[in-house]
Amino acid sequence: MNSSLRAKENLHIVFWLLKDFAWISDFKVLGVTMAVPTFFLSLWITWLGRSDRSELAHNLAISCWITANAIWMFGEFCFDDSKRHWAMPFFAVGLCILALHYLRVWLERLKS
Image (tube, rainbow, N blue to C red; front, side, top):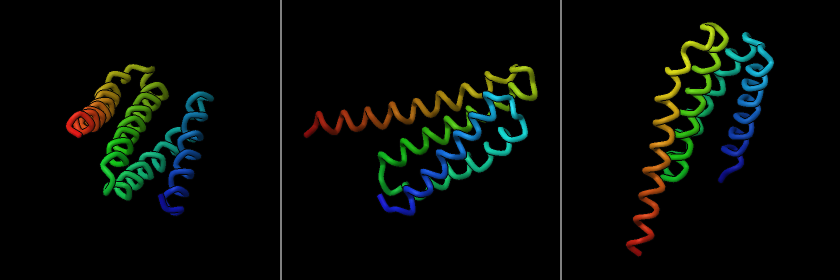
């Protein structure tokens, strides 16, 4: 992994932690504000790592997780937690991406 990508991943963690800290602390403006760069940086990291199938699968799953997390947070902040069900498909897609990735890895190992 190159140092430029590692630096982006580390910055992504900072944004993600700030978003979750704001969520748990009920700092609505900070939480929603930090969700935006967290989401877009996850997509950028996914794009940069797309040449490696494993990195692509894991980063896509992370992007799904962040999307679900942001929807859930926004629903708690603005809709009295009545929109949590909108987040569930994103969690499910992320899990399916990883399940398919690991199924492929397992099948490849069985063949060799």
